[in-house]
Image: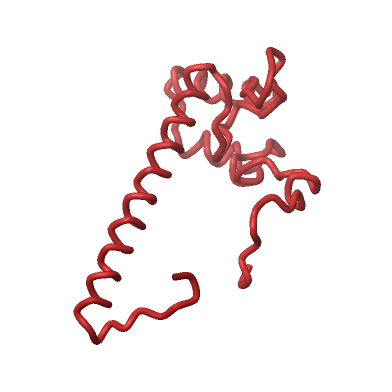
Length: 133
């Protein structure tokens, strides 16, 4: 049936479209469950699941095997410790924020949202490319 058009003016065509839509929704739900399960598995193993790296951490290869893990970034951790110390000493949050802005310390906004994939990963050719992208 690939490449054939559905005649949505007939009741049989509309019925087929509904059946196809139900299976498409089922497949979408199944993919979502598999992805959620994979992320949960990675979290249980203590591995990095992707997304924005929390300030104070960096992504490094997993020393115990496959994948990546989060490791404390000493420079950013020192900044966080300084902020916490100032908050506990009852410094003004506005003063802390203005001091951080005036300093040369990198902020979370100056980092990329996620680690860049290597050229080999991007051009592996295993997935079809979007015609628009």
